[in-house]
View 1 (cartoon, helix red, strand yellow):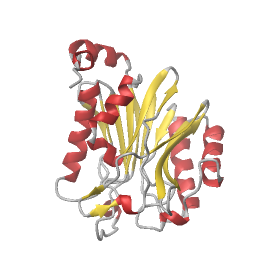
View 2 (cartoon, helix red, strand yellow):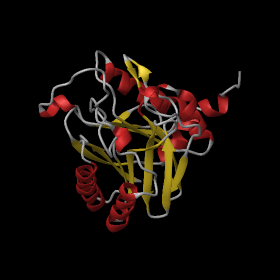
View 3 (tube, one colour):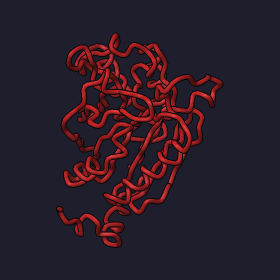
View 4 (cartoon, one colour):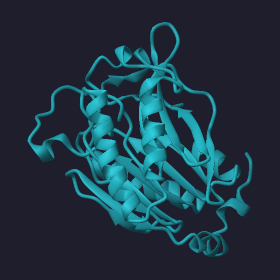
Length: 264
């Protein structure tokens, strides 16, 4: 399966962000990818009044994303904001294109490192997987990466690939944590982990202020034995990666952690 990772910087303008999506999805489709993954907060970047842009998954912005997927013949996964409870929003990963039309609401909210996502976001309550070309793919968003139970649930539901859409918070050691956690989740589940972050704003000369998570770059693909097989730098970049799905069964023969799991 050939997939694409679009490490980009979303903006305050949802229409401009759709243009960014179209440009990268067009390149990915031309390269033969069947799926392209964009970061969390792709509809509108964190640090903006996201509640003003939140809309249901059957409204205009999502509809335009579906049209792009149809026009280009590729499945697109991109982060957006949908209405939540009591004036809050939901942090949503929308996946559309072909026979796929699903979404996942982020379960684990980023109340860490001086930031409180739960002040403005309603948590999701259910893992989500979808099927593409006979392969089951699990969904996760950013801080979810720190919680192995979600990846285990996805894998028990048949996931062979887990994708993570993120806008990772910067800070000392945070790039290293991002990489280590992606590798750990791949080893926990003997799945491919495809982790796509916003590019590092500082890589294009933007200054960072406060604790708003805006991305650190370093998107990566990890194979079922924890080996990094593709990785971006800090700057905006499009990666196209061919996944050898036969590695999953081979890894599970070598490392049968799923079969050896004991419920405590």
